[in-house]
Image 1 (cartoon, helix red, strand yellow):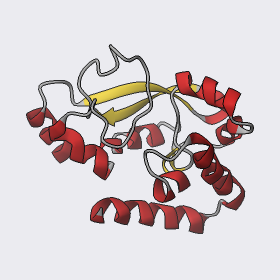
Image 2: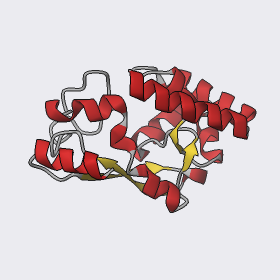
Image 3: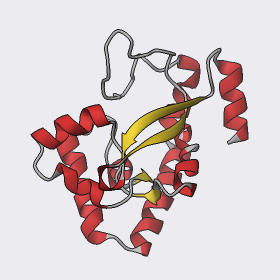
Image 4: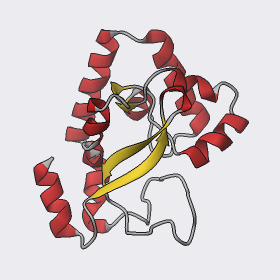
Length: 164
């Protein structure tokens, strides 16, 4: 974490860490911590929008942090604070959650467990996987949860990020 923070500070003139409100367990809001990879005020012109593959808001020198998912390491603080788990559905921004709950039946069920740093949708999906499909992964995780599944998803997350 210290090495990534040092690189981020050298590679960008802006702050190293980024905080953003997300929806967690039982719909409660919390502040998620990440290494900042986007330009400062990246959504000033467009407003909130979902991240996408090849997102032009990401600073080129920090793109590898995002693609390797190392930008998510500070979320271990959220796990330590009890707001997140290592494995579970990824927490979404409130602006998007409201709309997704309106559009996709059962979307709110994903808030019945703590959100995770990684999960089924992160291992088997991609940035551009649509929300309904990701919900399918989240619901599959909810009904299949086990220590063995969490271990498998953690290992797949690690090896996918190291060798991709």
